[in-house]
Length: 231
Ligand SMILES: Nc1ncnc2c1ncn2[C@@H]1O[C@H](COP(=O)(O)OP(=O)(O)OP(=O)(O)O)[C@@H](O)[C@H]1O
Ligand SMILES: [Mg+2]
Image (cartoon, rainbow, N blue to C red; front, side, top):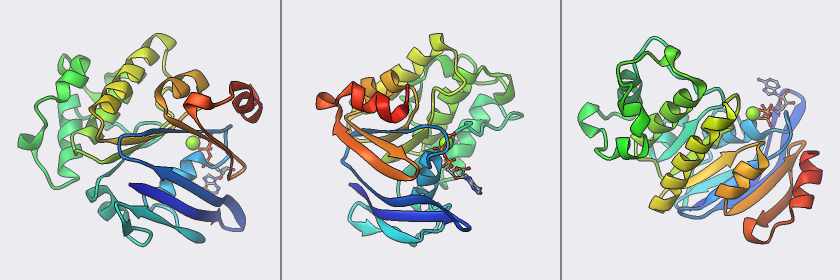
């Protein structure tokens, strides 16, 4: 349902992505791992149309979306949860959710009724300000804000970054519940290897802008992964 074909891009003179290829099927979770600064976030930005490509193309549901504006890609069902989460601190949880809907031309009445099944904790804090939430709650809210727009694919950038170990399990449960629904694909950028491998079907590793390793998680070698992540 999604493919990246030979994606290269640069910041000025410095090449950041080199010939990146990726295929994502409906309902799959793909883990993209790699050390700091290898280009993981940049790759997500190119998928969202926030970076100019030097070469390559993206296909989403058989359409070539490479020249589409960011808004059109989002409208078509690609949801982006950026690194650092970008919650509006002075708005309440509920207002943050509604803003997510409005950004897609929808309104409060379109809030899916089952959203609090996946995020029972958010229901208890709907009137709390985004800035007063813990890191884990903000991450849940950031994912919920995208999920209410009913995306077909979600790009998740380091959801466990800066989150207490005890809360990581909640984030994992959330992603697993989305996966179990079976109709949303997830591209999970993550440095926490065990977390990523528990959730993913396929693992890609990026080093200096290139994919240097790719394997189904079911037959992957943890040593191969560890060497490339140097952990
Ligand atoms: N706006 C920018 N202008 C110039 N160079 C940039 C810019 N943003 C990122 N870079 C560089 O591009 C490279 C890739 O950065 P990117 O943020 O994609 O890495 P990352 O894999 O997401 O890292 P991290 O794990 O730290 O989030 C890095 O060398 C970074 O310094
Ligand atoms: Mg990053």
